[in-house]
Each structure stands twice: as C-alpha cells, then as structure tokens.
Amino acid sequence: MKMSKRVLTSAIAMVLAGGMGTASAAVDLDAGTGSISFASEATVAASGTAVNPSAAGATVTAEIGFSIAAGTSKYMRINLAAPLGAALVVGDFTVTSAATTAVAISSGGTAGDDYVIIEVSTSAGDIAQTDTLTFDPDTGDEIEVVDQSDYTISFATYEFASDAIAETNALNTASGTWFDWSTGYTASCTAGNPEKIDVVTPTQWLDGVSTAETIFTVTVDDVAGVYTLAGVEVAIATDYFANGSTFTVSGTMDAFTAPGEVLLNTGTGTVDATADTATWLTAGADGAGAVALPLAGDNFQLDPDGTTDMTPSQYSMTLAQLGTETFDLGGDVDFGVCGEISYSGSTDRLDFALKPGGVYPNYLRVVNPSSTDGTVIVQVWNDAGDTVTFDLGDIAGITSNTLNGLSSTPLFTINDVYTAAQAADATFDHNGGKLRVQVRGEFGNDAVDGASAVSSTSRLSDGIIIQSLTTSLDGNSFFMLKN
Image (cartoon, rainbow, N blue to C red; front, side):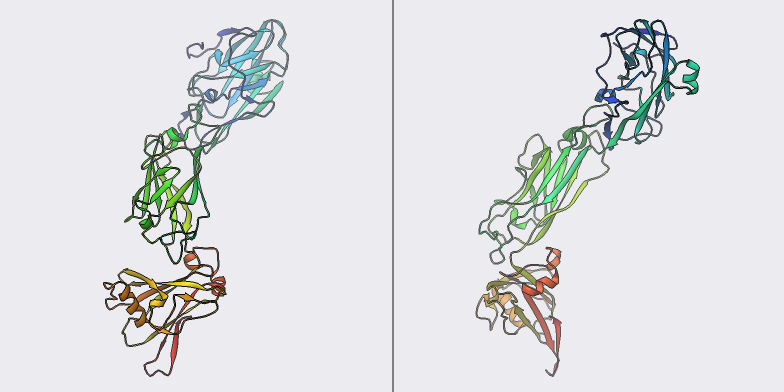
C-alpha cells in the first residue's frame, strides 16, 4: 500500500527483491516502446489537468545504466513535461534487482515541480547496470498536463547529487514519449449500391419488389487503446454517446412510412415525412425508434410502403450527444451525405415552359438517343409545387407510352401537356403561371442534378432528352428554349 502523500527529503523505503512493487512497466524508454494515448476530446486546462497513465498500464521503466555496489548509492533524475499536481512518494518507484535496495526522494517531487531526484542504494548485493527503475505514480493526481502535446519523460543516472541537480556528468540517460493524444471514437458512413427506383413504376425498385434496400452502412465505435484522463479505456456508449443520443437521417421519406420502414441496423426509425427525417435514440438494444451502439458497418435501409412513388434523394446523417457523456464534442457529429437513391434509366427536365394558352406557342419534343426501346413517364409541376404524373401516350398526337431507340416524338405543345395533366388530375391548375416538365425513360444513364458520376455530355449520348422551342407571332422565326 502506498504511503500518504507528503514531502519527503530523506525518508527511505526498503524494497526487497521480489517484494512490493507495481506490475511490469508498459513504457520501456530503452526499447522505445509502449506509449499510450489519451482521448483528444478531453478538456485540458492551461492551469493543469490531472491524468493517470499508470491506471492505463503505462508505468515507465528504464535501466539504471550503471552498477551500484553494496553499501553505496547513486542518484536518478526523472524530468517531466509539466509540473506535478501532487507530491510523489517513495512507493512510486520500484527497483527491480537481486540486491536489497532502497529508494529515497532527495529533491523535487512535490506539487509544482517538473522533476524528481531519487537516491537508489543497496544494503546487500550489487545493483547491476541492467537492473531497472520503474516509475508508477498510480494515485492519479500526481501527473498533470497543461495542453495536448506529446508528454515526454527522461531518466538519467548520476554519481553525485550535485550532478543530478545541475544535470551534468550523467552516467546513463533514457527518454521517450510517455503518452500522446488521439481521437477516441470513429464515426463514418459508406455509400451502398441499392437497386434503382423503377422509372416506370416508382413504387418499387427496378428488380420489381418493394423490400428493404441498403442505402449506406454506418460505423460508430470507440478506438481501442485510447483512454480517458482517469486511465480507463474509452467506451462509445458512455464516454461519447450515452443512451438517448439521437441519430437523424435526412432525405425524402414520403414512400417509407408504415407499412414501409426506415431501418438502422435492425432498429426502426421514427419517420417524419413532412420534415423528411428519420430518427433513432441510442439504447441498449435495437427496437422501435432505437439503435444500440457500437455500429460496425451496419446497414441503413429503406423499405418502401409499396403504394407511394419513391423519388430520387440523397441521404445525410447526424448524431447528437445526450449531454451526460464524459466528453463534450461541441455539437452534432455530421456524417455528410452517406448515400442516395435514383431512378433507373434516364431523366431530363424542362425548368421553364411557357404558360399554357399564352400568347406565344411552346413546342416540345422527347428524344431517345439510345438504341434501347423504353417506356417514358411525364411529370409536371406548377409554380406552387403541385405535381401530377402520367404516361407519354396520354399526350395528344403520341400513340404509345414506349419511345423506340434512336427515335423521337412528334412536336407537341405545352397546351397538350397541360390537357394530359388535367386528365390525370382534374384539380391540377397552372394558376396563370408557368410549368416545369420532367420526362423519365427506361433507357440510358442519368446525369441530372449531380445524382450520378455520369457527365452531362455522356447523358446526351444515350439518356432521354426533352427539347423546347417557341415561334414568333408571325410564325416566320423559331427560338430554341432548350435543346
């Protein structure tokens, strides 16, 4: 048992070979091995904050480096990277030797000192130069830091106390890093490769089913070998994200309300289709609105309800702490955009169509530049954001929903589009404003809105195209609005 903390200048503790002492040191200054890491998320005060590397197993050992004959002594100086927070005692030092040894604190070693000098003596047997001194200040209040720099420590052996004080004529020296600082948790997501939304039947995936698809995977875990300031290995569910922390995934959610699901691992998210979010609280086990940590590449999945059209969307995620954790991360962990869903085939959009029934006519044409025949779906929005969807063949003058490869439709007008839209939904009205028109084809690749890595140039080679033009009032000139 360690002695009570007090200033010692000549007290001697007899340490018999094979007797009291701490376990083998984790940090070997001679071998240059064994430093540990404290969590960089910890708060360190410039006035000093206590850390306990010994509790993490990071005692410090070095060879004495010079023999000490029976009945004599030598002095060892330990230099620290920051002043001590509390006084050291002789029990903080262990000499491993076949000799009968004793240690006395000769100088330093009190609160505010950044060094300690000890006298190492033997009353029976010689201390060999390869015998070791272990430093183990294991009460937890002795070692302090003032910042998160690497904490270095050095041992030096001297013949005389005056040399140890002056730090001259060292017989042996050893130094190294006792501990450093590192992030104690990892939080990341990786995009999956989900089925695409069926461009013709967007209530289901392209494979023809309405089951759960993995959109991305998530990892939230602690990092092994990183410690709290108390010397305890960090734990993700207590030190970083206590039960009750909140995962939030943002993205289009309309098609994934009950009987659909949004899943993280096997926990069912609480879906807010108006806010386009799904949330989970961290808990001891997955469940309704709950997910257990850690996560190690676990799935985020979307399971459609089978009746509501899915729409392309990116999905981003955040994780907010409860507030009772060991470490305050200073805000939500933002994973960024983790994954996305997109239509099969290709999509193109006309963002400015003239007002139906307006002064100037507006002619449209849809082109399939690929060699693949495919169905085409049309979606129309008014300026208020109301929307309606219908088949290409519902437009006057177009006889099929399928657009053959390398072909195009005849010219049709925005009036024709509006008539088809009202036939699909009699409540749809342009309200005196303009329309936006999107076409989706069962062919080609999609490069609209940055939803894929395919460039716009590539899209023009095989993806669907909607063209728009108007003519002068006298009909003698025409102007391309979109080609």
